[in-house]
Amino acid sequence: MDAARTDSAMRIIMVSDFAHVTGGAARVAITAAAALARSGVEVDYVTALGPLDPALDQAPVRVHRLQAEHVWDRRNPVTAVAAAIWDGNTQRQFGRLLAGCDPARTIVHFQQWTKAMTPSVIAEASRRGFAHAVTLHDYFIACPNGNYYSFPKARPCQARPMSPGCIFSRCDSRSSLHKAVRLARHLALQQALARSGHLPDFIHVSAAAQAVIGRFLPPAAVQHVVPNPVQVVDHGPAPVDDNTRFLFVGRLTPEKGCLQVAEAARLAGVPVTFVGEGPCDPQIRRLNPAAEIISWMPPESVLAMMRRSRALVFASTWQETAGLVCIEALANGLPVIVTAGSAATGLVESGETGIVIPPADVPALVTAMRALAGPHQAARLGAAAHWRYWRNPLDEERHVRELTGVYRDMLARRHSPVPVPFSVMATPEAV
Image (cartoon, rainbow, N blue to C red; front, side, top):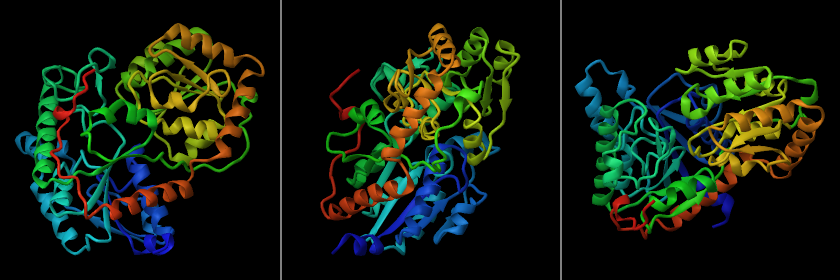
């Protein structure tokens, strides 16, 4: 069977908690579902939390809304904890949908499942013998807090996931209760997949993310790297020499490095704009009273803001899986200051398309900002960034091509599932 005929015969069930853009994972799920459908693939989009994004409404995608709510929005804390670990209601609803699908031609692709659906839906696809994949936009598949990061210590985790050092570590961003719930949820998923004997395929969004968490997956796990799609139009390099403001886009939380950016901009004497929301808003205003803070904006508005900026600052102190905003900036000819350790580091050639600095290093950030604030340096790096990106853009067409290649491989292997327990505890490596 040729590739075109195989793709048109596929049925993809894309699963995401959200039906609208709330972050990178939901955005990729919606973009991929719509692009696959436009390419001729039969696509169902299974979600729980509305409203419906226009991209799904305009594409030939069948949308299925499960009756579920955000697990932490439930009024009864006991019910919320139980639902966060395992939601049998969404599992039954999802099972009824799968009952009408042909496993010989259907791929179930989980993009996001921790906010409303819980691991029960992954277990249901595995129990019914469907070929299924999980895209790892975060590290929840192995790490209970999802970031492989110690939030109290403000540094990447040093423990093996689910080892005693992990289990007893107070590493969660919220509380010990959240950590306990996430541990229980992780164990529930492991046990369910072990009972079914069917491992999902794992899709990393970057080689750097695979290097961080891939070693903690079962040795028999099939792993792929498929970069996220980027929706940008080539308008040429941004006129960065005409711009003065540095730009930060992301959640205003400590691990994103927003406080270091605010302080460094003040010390460097450069204007800075923050696009995002989060608990660090008041601290940013105290550290840098001149900083501009704008709430979340539509993607097209963020791209327009980039073209009015001098450079993007991506200062995360955790090991980010992708750094989508960095790719968008580079595609627009905007140089990027990025901290070492995140996946975004692999996107930037220091001194060529941006500047790589150590994480949580305010003096280094000040030096980088001052360098780009000077004449011609930002324009030179931005022009190189634009040229390098558009040689091989990470567009929807490339994403669909790489995804369908993964899907074809999964269907070809469907009759030879991997009959091994899913347990990071079986992984021999330690950190």
